[in-house]
Length: 290
Picture: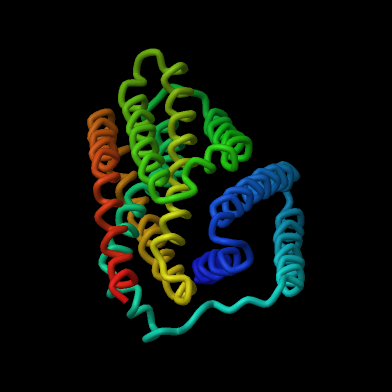
């Protein structure tokens, strides 16, 4: 609950600190830095586990807690910003915005890419391939390196709704390619495994960039806090809740499951541009009428 609330508040804060045209770029840099933190944390965890003592693990938890205190102190030094007007409160303005709800649901499907990366690939390595166990770590490192290196650069074309439409089409297609590679990887396992990891990482980058733009551009600025909270509930929270079940079934079904998941992502990719166009028109119609 703390993480979900933090994500919505952080997105609102960043949206208020910079002009609208700089929001996606700031989120891209923030995500790259987050992935660096993820890599450092994974390295420290590996070192702590290698000691074979619980003292090292407790020390790592204490260090992690201290970093949150540093983060809180740093945040307190930022310029004061408002979350926007409360509107009708309790998310009722955002809930009543059919265009915003629709694009949030669409993004939730694209966000399942993260479950494929964090849950599906490791389980596929263990249960669906003959690859050595260390390739699980290699896959995570490769994904992190690609995101850190390319997130900011590849997010630039998705700075407006038109760019976000194209990014979602590419993101869904790349995720479909990654799932299809895992479905076919019983032969030529190493080349297809690397192909899957790269395609999924690129799909994750483009999907995230498109989501940031749509979450901001489709929301009225004076209700940004309420709309960001709604976005995190649907686009992020529902994907996290459904991800383990969807990926668990896919891994259990084997190559047929991965092929079906690839077909689903391909369908979502094709449907994304017209859905975003319709949702954007629905979201902005009230403002134009007013």
